[in-house]
Image (tube, rainbow, N blue to C red):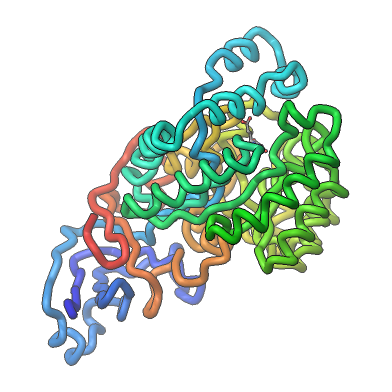
Length: 404
Ligand code: DI6
Ligand code: FE
């Protein structure tokens, strides 16, 4: 088996046990074997017997190396677009006004249902390629624009197919409880019955890694959300939640009771919610793209999350209605400028903490035994990744030990 040596680089390991900010190692070396990291550290400390076993050597040209980026919250597979709704909002309508008038998520549901599997694949591929071009090596894709068995299945199959065809690992999340489809208008509980019926069928087809819901006054109540969580628990599937985005519904506390991997958005999170998340070890996923695009003014309580020791992740929320965004690097900047995260918190939020939000313990930091997913960047310091707007300094990506 090839044993690769990567040298002439600075490595931001993001390992919490490394004392330097970003876990930064100057003049570092990395050794890979079979898609895993075997060794990482200062080149001067590379053991001679390990150096002798290396069969192939790469000069990283002085690049900065970080873990592959992880986008832990996307709705990347959908049909149509919502540019018209954007125009309406510019004329004064709010996101909730548009949703209540039958636009919003419902219009994307219509377009997604009308699209064939190959059409959805082609649309998703364009968005995915943009993320991969910025160093994403793992991402989550949610369903939730089908809202009927055949269409939820179609979207999840497309997500799986994208993961098989591209140098990226896709984790799928069933978000059947995203909105109430037109055929269930006025009968939300009957639709929750349908979500609970769909879940085991899709899971049996190997299409579901986690389960999510949109807990909000324009979507599902906590009681309805809990029924979805119970169905997930019965199958041994982890849960996550769109919680406290537009109001405080107490969703985070509910999700924490179900040991949620993450609670996402969180602008209206209460202190009790933050405490419950800390207790449960749920990650707080912040979505600055949605905050920006909807021109929200209520900031997520970052100080509260820090104070309670809740791990914060950052994601694109790539979706047509509230965050039509395919740049995770831009989200790093926005997390700092809008939410006042430090660049180190932001980078941790798209690596180590994003991995945690997906329940993945084999990635997100560069350490022996973990996956060899990493990115070489043309920057002198990791803070530059969050500093620049619209730049893409990616040089190369190594995915599963192979140069992309
Ligand atoms: N919250 C969001 O921001 C997205 N979904 C959700 O539950 C928006 C989805 C959309 O508007 O299409
Ligand atoms: Fe979302």
